[in-house]
Amino acid sequence: MFGGPKVKLNKEILERCKKCSDAGGYASVEEFIEHILEQELKKIESTGTSADAIAESMRGLGYIS
Image 1: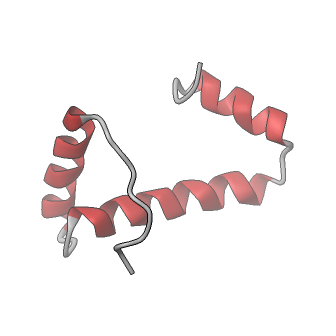
Image 2: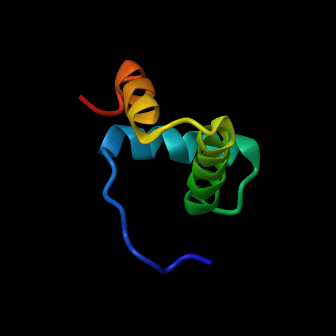
Image 3: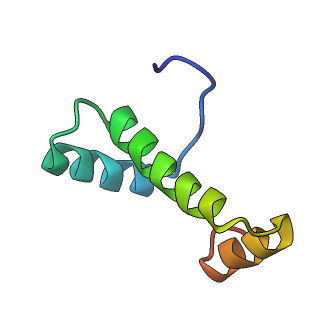
């Protein structure tokens, strides 16, 4: 499940993820992050919006500039 490509995260975000994964009873921080990413991807994919609309939404959320 894990051991594929690596992703670098901001240290503060990783620490927050670790706290949430512990509180949520996840087996690992990787499992927690994968679960959160899967949820967000499903939201984006289910809207059926264009790439431009997705980019605009992500800009509005501060994920990209």
